[in-house]
Amino acid sequence: MSKMVLTYFDIDGGRGEAIRLALNIGGIDFEDERFPFSEFPVVREKTPLYQVPVILLDDRKVTQSNAILRYIGKQVDLYPRDNLQALLCDEILDAIEDATDKLVATFGLSGDELKSARQALVAGPLTLYLQWAEAKLAQGAGDYFIGNRLSIADLKAFVWTRALCSGILDHIPTDLVQNVAPKLHQHLEFIAALPPISQYYANRG
Image (cartoon, rainbow, N blue to C red; front, side, top):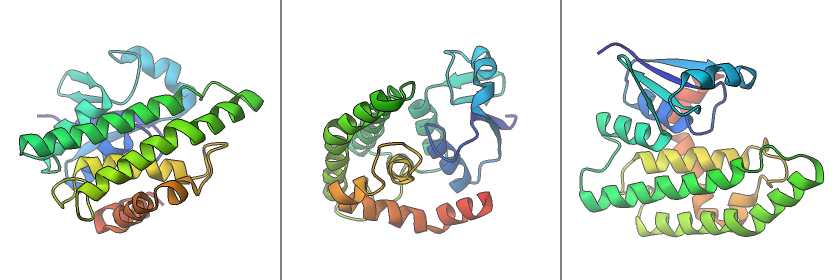
């Protein structure tokens, strides 16, 4: 098999980031094809569904971030082998995707319209999903979501909460996660401190 090529925005976050982390943790050699937002209109025309991330496997272009993440997770032992644990892992992935969709729906807004929409998200869906995820973490009875070991569910949650705390999302308080889901914020810090994760971002500068 030729080298995998992952195509996604040139940001350390978003739907492609957990895939990058899984590939790096697993030591899989891949081309990290990044592009600026300004080039998206051109890039999207070369993708199956006019969206990214897309991964190239030999001559096959595969889309859908969670499908790609599960595929890589299985390659690098970051996806549960037990069917029930796999279901619980998928539940986390898809719920965070739902929450992400709600946030992405506000990206085209500006001014007071953006402020109002983001405040509504904070008061409603974001708080709901964060507290739900915190409860799921507690059910894991350890530092991780699934089976007391690192999985792609942890990577997905880490990337999501990291973005919410980053300050790059206007009108999303940087202390939102800490205030409404403190144990989930602790999970963010725990995952960030794991050597493969901390080293990855140190190398990124």
